[in-house]
Image (cartoon, rainbow, N blue to C red; front, side, top):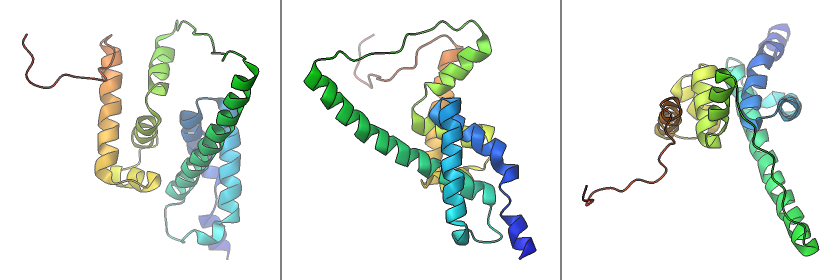
Length: 177
């Protein structure tokens, strides 16, 4: 029992879980809430953890799934709020854009503007140092899909570094130049 208890020690995984949650939510407070929710789920489902499995990957999967559940709930809630706002005739509000003075903050912001699927894939591979297979398993997608997402994320960040905006649309073939 004591060795089983040690194999389920999540304290050593908290930093990794917080980093990943911060990457997903883009907000420190929301990230802490997400990690808390994920740890509650992990504790409730600890019997499903297979001894000898990678605890970190299992916990990262739970964080990912908790995040997806929150997004679904948020979309539903926003849809209802939007309908209420439309009924009241209130204009939507948008947060103000802020200038980025520090280069590191610019790169971080570029990372955070990546599409969520690319951001989560790149985070797991580049920051959490999971193998492609481990990251794909964590996200529940094929390895090729993960590799494609990581490649597109890296290309978008390179475009940012070069001072170019990433091309979302490209003409293929038949163009006279």
